[in-house]
Image (tube, rainbow, N blue to C red):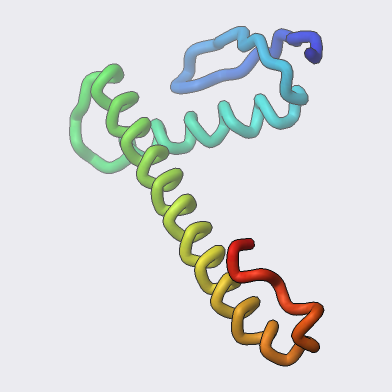
Length: 100
């Protein structure tokens, strides 16, 4: 297991010390993404309390995650269909088994 390092980040104007096994750059990028989502909510014009803005930012980030997962599943399905279509051009002994 990798050693956890402490990375200082700023989210919503507050400083946080995050412990992570990921690289400092990765941890900062994640924090910056959260900060941007929070700033987008706050800049939308609606007057919201900071904890509610954080929840709305979390919902926006979760929506991004779900959309990315859906896209990945769609790409995987298209690749499976393409593999099936292309496998018919292979000699019978080289074709993938149906169970695979």
